[in-house]
Length: 321
Image 1 (tube, one colour):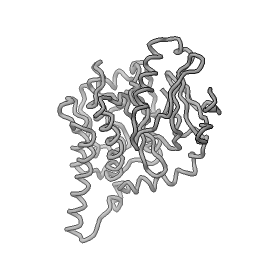
Image 2 (cartoon, rainbow, N blue to C red):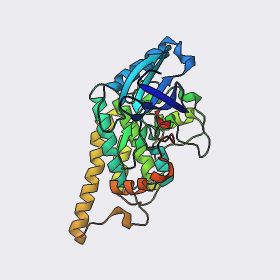
Image 3 (cartoon, rainbow, N blue to C red):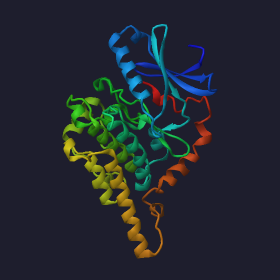
Image 4 (cartoon, one colour):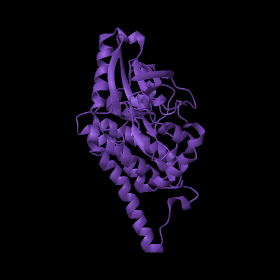
């Protein structure tokens, strides 16, 4: 594509872009390259959208956001170069290893919320937050991708039993009503992620995106504990607050949501210490998965040898637009 970057092979396709595995010849490191699909290259609006997203992401520097290295254009096709991240999507981790205990959820939320607050403070909403757009490295570090992309046209999304979660599962009520997403919409999506990690299922399920949209607008979600036993009532309340229909009733920031989960965790451990003289781990209960971010890292360590070899494509599939 130019003298600095080498394209090795195509590893994925999305609605608007094709993703390639490549190599940065100058710095001798693997890269992921996302290029606008040829059929959109002549579409001025699509090119502008792609360019704005790429340029916006290029200005972000945060440990929980995948770094944009470069943007450019070759033969009329715009592209963006990103660091290569050998990781699983959170959606894959939940499907393979969930449900998770409150401690694991608190550890994940702390990282994702830090990245969300960072972009929100800069006037940007993620617009497409989901478990597919969060990568989990073997060490347990979470990384956001596809910031500013948007969810496309949800009515065209089809569903089938056992299929991976679609963008419409994470859609806030205001988005389902046709309004533009805001930082509060990201907090709602983060609530869906927390709910799914705790219970193993999203708060709403349906055979079509239109039905899902109506559920997001009108239907109250069941407490996560009704889906999976052993979840404390206080954790139910924290997650359900993030899923309030009225944005003004949700947490004001993603960080406030994460801190609420962490505060529950700290208070519970303090109570246990006073009553038992020792630290009781959530994992001691048969009904609750092993807790703590260390628990998530233990799970992730078992996945390393399965699919994280360089060039396997893991960590790149989530970069597709």
